[in-house]
Length: 478
Ligand code: GAP
Image 1: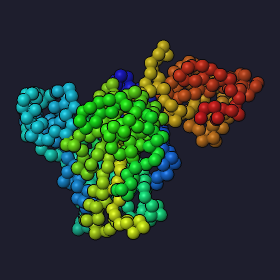
Image 2: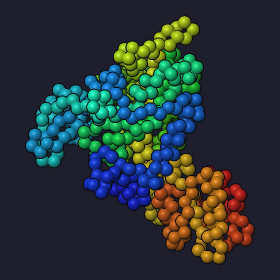
Image 3: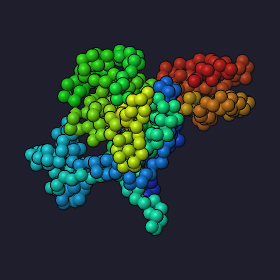
Image 4: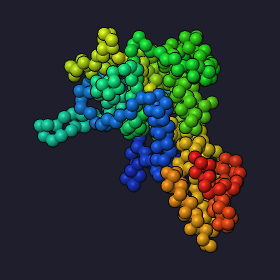
């Protein structure tokens, strides 16, 4: 299926490799005109869930930051993957991925010694030339650069996560939020990681998009009454002891599999959000990080994973209890207090982080919505993620029909509806083109339109056609 999706993606302007005329560069992809619309819709859904529903704030910070930020956060010391190279041809590999591919099972959280022992025991060699693999070492994933000229030059890094840049302004956000906890802050933006050998399309990029939410909380109040609204959601759960079960979030909390109702609530919200985007809920699973696998800053981490037909398990969002690790670290290095005072109780807030990628969910929406039938291939995008809400077709290019079609197209534009105007080829051909990029409704303007002010609206999934009054069109297709 990957080949078919890739073919449509390139041909119809969804996603395609960047810098193609210069031979491309692994880990960089462009969103074409259709893909950009889908990505924008996915980001807007995230915004709605957290800014409108949860009442969180949204900020935007620079992608480049000075060295101190990453010294304090621990990324300079710890943000590394385990790398090995082929002694013969020099090809670089992420050691855990190499072992996983060989064993055909996950090896999350193994250290250098364990991975080297497995490589020796399993006689794993370079997949390209069968050469011997070199010693494994820590490879820092951050891109380094410098800001400013001459003596002013300052070592800087492209951010590997948006989270840190949100923490830096905590004092200001605390004031703006009128000194109340919990305080939720969303940031959607680019992050950069010099991934060792990105080969899985947009699943592993070197420049990618994140939508990360930092919820600053009182450490004694890591709870929410809202949990009741998601407690009935059923899902497959794999806990840190490798126990797997199908259960409701309510039971998972009751049995102590998920310890915090706050984390369980946000796992439930993430599942609701993915379903609203169009991701198949039956292919989603909650997975708790094992103790040895968890990031250096976290005490408990849960991922929502998607089972992809093409790429295996794909982590879409990570929800972590980052404690006061980050605020404390920035307080220590900057000398600026991150302490709050609520009715005489002084403390550094803890952070519950909800770290969404954007590119992976976009891909999983595309994979989930891919469909084939007698008409060929099409995408069943929900209205909210579809690149355009409607396509407008004049039946013929004469007899005042194009003028009427343009008039209707312009009225949709005025209603701020993303619509596509297509006058080329037979109506059947135009339906096929619209289906191929997942447009939910096609509107045909014909001779009856001139007589009675109605148009034909054809539904993408059922292929059913209906006559609709022009005045009711916007309501009908939204
Ligand atoms: N602030 C925490 C953090 O960055 P993460 O699990 O490393 O956590 C969060 O990243 C999300 O960002 C992931 O769940 C994934 O969706 C996305 N992501 C991470 N690395 C990526 C990459 N190289 N390419 C595409 N998306 C990536």
